[in-house]
Length: 611
Image (cartoon, rainbow, N blue to C red):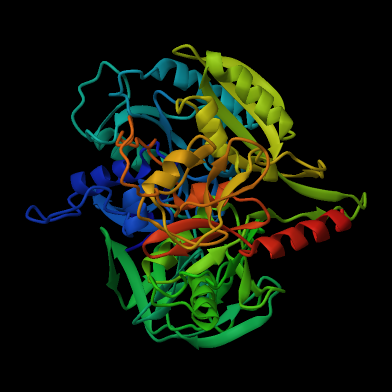
């Protein structure tokens, strides 16, 4: 197929604004599926975690044909932790469809992805999605988008953006709200007319930039990208050039795969402008150039974003270690982590100074939380340390700098004061406050990333579960000094055994509990949050003394408040520096780093002396 018969587009938006659902409908209405074919909802969300969480974690490519033109569609992640993928994806497309929720409007990731698209000279198509929502405000969102384009220094061509109103779930798009709502044909037609065909040199030597990396059981490394020039044929010799032009490896393209619907189809030849996947290389990674032997210089590429957060992954050395998982040794954990970085270039792994431990670096808590959740489902047992931000030294000023985030919070007006107070304690600076409809206020903060570690649970408590927080990496800024962490201490088990209802009933006056009757507990395990600032050792296995004397009220029912069960991400965000999260296939527990109370006291004295 010649280049003019191809369009390459990315679908970009803030998390949960409907990218994958809209892509489902584009595939269905273009005839990519057979009439009898059963297709799951959000078909591009292929792994279990994506389906459960309803978010896209990995960028994926699909292809549809409309009026004899093949449209390669790249579905991108919407969460800020995976924002680095969006930057790279935009380098291999000629246009972008930017979705914005008709009720929520412009959110931080919308601003981030649109800014990247405009900087690359793309002329995005704006789709105001979820028009069928009862609280939709399409006209206001249209104005917000125009203001956003202007604030991002869009040129006149970009400011004259085409816009459609749509419902991805119902499968229609219209240019005017009064038009009949029948199908997505207006969006297909707008893509063909507004997005240019790739204008690339088909006769030059073959070259492409690796943009997406996967590890395949049968094919090995599979690298996806757009062919920037020339043609590639099956089994042709190629070399891989690093960003500095150094040859990384030489080899052959043992597989050429082009996209048809949701499938990758083996082909014998591909040409400039097409998005393809290639196999047969062992060391090539993102963003290296794969090219013909005669090419001497690498293609320009977007470098991988540096990590901003690290966590320590350790073996599970607790009393219950090895009982619930199959993979428990440090060698198994090491092999799994190093296989992860084969297919996930946003994560880095190095050996820790601790024994049987590894430092894992990434873009955020969610990204590393997804890795941990995947490992526990594979049968791993491990313990995780508190997330730590990665600082750097400013070479010009010689000062220490730390990562900052832009945080946008939608909250009911009565709770706005509590949010502002807590954010200011964590060194957050309020930059904007405005009403957002429905008696809500939209607050915008700039805050050090470490100020947000452990805050989300507090935030939900302060806003009675009604607040919505969105965050985006905003670069590095000056080190802000000590930041207030968790204010409450922990209830720590002083005995091994199974938690007893009688004991838990007497303990619930001391704070909120994390465990239920019958759960296994051990010395040093955290059973709940103390109502005061200090830690408290308690006995959760003490049973009621039995006597043969009856007394009034003796057999009253012991009613327990339901325990506060934490998800993996909540547990990781909750812990302090002297605590760990124990992760197994069947449980997530919180414990002290030093289980023995005497060792804990020694460690506290050492930290006090160091301070």
